[in-house]
Image (cartoon, rainbow, N blue to C red; front, side, top):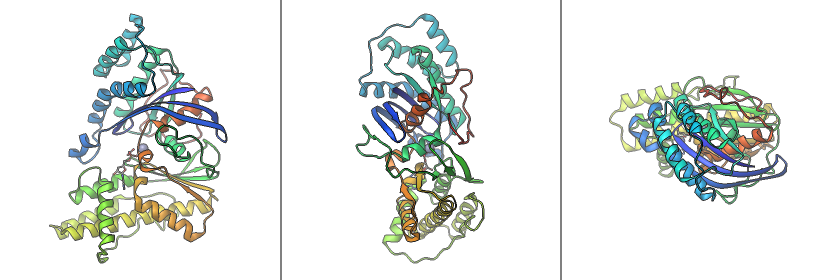
Length: 398
Ligand code: KG4
Ligand code: ZN
């Protein structure tokens, strides 16, 4: 099956084309034929976070050029076969709120005909609704244009499933499920918008066992970075300063409480930590470079201790064979190292699977992967039923 996938839930605009066959544990094969991604981070940097309407505008502007690039790589740019005027009229209605996107599709249609794909996979949530809608309306337009069915994908499932693949030969053939991917499984999903612990007892079945009650882990990194006058996205910046503090052996002059670590639930809370940093910054302004590094190190350690502590407790309780970590914050080298060290120290049988940083952040490959299994099950969605759900939860998927 050949699938074109679209991801626009946050500030990455991404389109890919994959060819997939087989099922989990049975002859699965997955080839990325074309993959194009545009990160809007620089566009949002002046705002210190993702600005939904700006994200929407950027998605609308970039989707067709990215699709063209993904199809070009896949050698799927065909000769034009002009659509009936009806189709273009309907597409104009579908894209009534994205006139710029309609114009670029209309221009594409003059140059190229239907791409030889069997299904379109698109992120339906969770994420920023104005951003999600652009991808969804784009999917509907292509579906009408090419007469191809759509599957709706939960973005968080995409992060989980992509973490389960072996990641050799990135990005063309990321091939197969890792032999260590076994159930029950605990997934720690940490990004700018989410902090969730998910229990998966069998393939594609999910139960949310904990989530953040306020800020997401990545959001906390971004907000603390802003307090320290560091650019957006803040995660890599904080991580860099923290690594300097460790390399220079700066004395430990700070200690933050580990929020919710002793709490019985698997929930998280990071807004108090941000407030603690704000108070410190106010008390000690202007901050010396060393003090910034010390704050960054203690902040990163605190977040890490909480994430690692809760994840290992969940792994023990649910007898996890595998722990997967996904989302942008999983690119954090310190958190990765702490998690694997803690697992080893505990003699835990659970195997840790974390995708390489370039696949940990948002992309369309993960949407194609989850979408493939839905398409294989025939779980196509009517245009009328396909909507953006900003707060979409993970549960058993179709
Ligand atoms: O998954 P992602 O690309 O987008 C969504 O939020 O869905 O995650 C982006 C988040 C940002 O908050 C960014 O600061 C954080 O991931 N991040 C990191 C690191 N790299 C990215 N946080 C901590 N350490 C990093 N190395
Ligand atoms: Zn994400």
